[in-house]
Length: 305
Length: 88
Image (cartoon, each protein chain N blue to C red):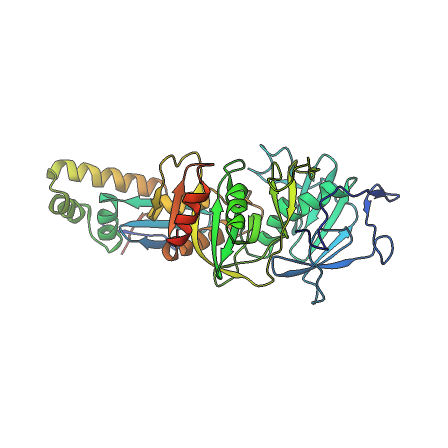
């Protein structure tokens, strides 16, 4: 099941003179490698568990200082215990042990822990990169079957990744986990090639967890966007299965926006327009958290959700 | 008295509901039920009285109650900046 580019086990890190992470690479210390991530080519100085790319670089990830200085962004970081600041055109995101200076085409990483830096870069930090590029991410997991993708949205612990794991066992292919990004045509961009679960249901042995405390299950993802054909919202608000429409559907999608901090101008507008387009175009189903059984998932999938 | 929607708002009809997006503040407002009927009349230049009669006809409610509902809605929309008094 493992793909050659994935790394499920924690990697050792080395510190540079400034305390930054220095990547170990076949090309030499600190050499940049090109990866593919959500349809973009990323040249990164830190090692990432992503497929390689040979395309022109869209975003550069560099090592350097990202001091937490700037104007606080209201509404950001409170519950997540991180600092979010505006510094010129960039956004500073700072956790204990890792800080990032985030722009649309360049991310500066200032971290002592490569695993933590990699985990944050592929999740929260990337949602801010995409906001800077005018695209708003949703919080969910997506699988596809026969070229038709279904997205599971919901808060952490709602069972999104578990539902996807169940569907993968039924023959679906993973598209993305955690961060859901759509292209201009409403298709889901392929994310990192792994599913993150609290436990590995396919392993008899305990597996090491990533910096986010979950086990990474390496899975193949395609390289092309997959048209989104249905959304399933898994939230404690939805105790009875059924269909959502109108304002209820709009609220259900918007509440699962990934980057809810006002980090960039026009962000709320982009988010609303995206949600409106989804509500107008797609069936949106509500399911109680952790309620899907394999039998029900198979039936809903055969009915087109 | 007639009303208009300030330029910063975008209106998105959704079947029998309406979403109004405040593009300056990145907020959105949802209208449903009788509020949609009254809104459509008010933003088309209709008065509170016309909107009241529309509610009476559509929802078979007492005219006094309908007027109170429309006036409360207008007060709410004006307070939130979604409607302003048209000067011409």
